Length: 452
Image 1 (tube, rainbow, N blue to C red):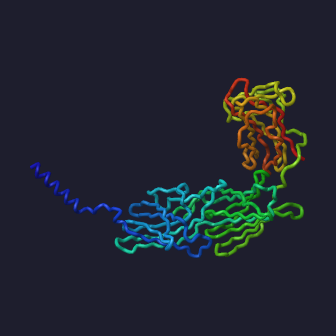
Image 2 (image 1 turned 60 degrees about the vertical axis):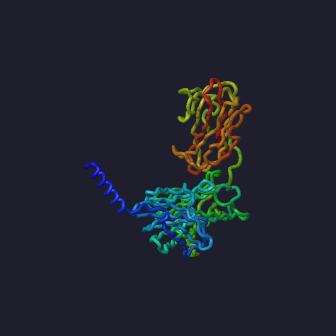
Image 3 (image 1 turned 30 degrees about the vertical axis):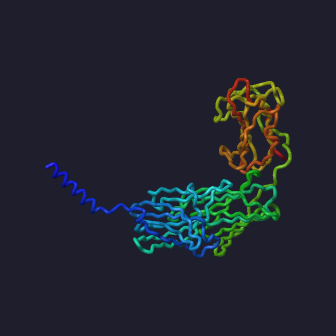
């Protein structure tokens, strides 16, 4: 009886096996010829070096990404796919994996191409063209698909005339831009600001800078700024940046009677040469670089640390909470001026908030003495509006400083202009060394003076 049961089981299993479809292998894949067309588009390479092709299978709900090199003669893309019905997506200038949010289990609506970081640190879009098509693959058939590629980015072109030679770090800031675009061609609601230096002006002071961006769903906001001059314009609304169109902004530095202004003229240019004009936009520009010396009226309270201490701190000075192993010592030697100085030991950040007037020029001085190679220090100053930090024109040196020969001026007589909205300057000196007894950074003779 047991032998009969085993025999019947083998028969059933064998019958089931004969009725199952065989597993597909790569030999079952069919050649699919894919063609790309770019109707009515100018300024694009006819045959990019590589295309990104995404094939979405609605049945399995899986997406496969391919990087396909076109045939140099026919500009044809070749893929091998199993028989079936698919959605195909083709996009240009999107080779790097880091710019994709991609998972094979995601639908096209959940796959995103992000803005790309430039060599200057800003983020812009590439010249992305996107096409979608239905792909039908049959066994033994002449399988082909055609992608009609359409440009999915717009361009902001900023033309600036008569750029002053001293305004050598002018940059463009464009806000309210989508951060990414889905594979199906929809732009995200997440927004960011792209900032990029202007192209170097020619000998006539003319600069032209192009930015490729995903078209904003609302008005974008344009400003020009200079960190060295602590200058930023008011926000200028850009009415429209559309896919396959150029929005052209002309800024002219000029000096009409009574004031110095910049005029902005905005044109909307389709890459088919259709133009739409906007009214001029006059804005104030900064005065020239700060020059001169302080007026002798020191705005720093207790600048030489001569006053009586309060709460274990020099009068009028405070500790930044970010430091650790903090210790401040009153000393009478060495000093740069007067009878006293202080020594910062350990990781001690000492600061004072100095009232300032927006747009005013100031001269900063602070004398420090790092007697040994163990001392590691730098100044770290911040313009503020009330209790809010102002990112424009931060006084944060990139490198650390170490041993000095006696007292030196940490600022080297620095002359700076306060941002137009600044109400105070947080003047801060930082020591970064490991806490060691009787060893640290000596500080004395601090001053902030207006330049009249």
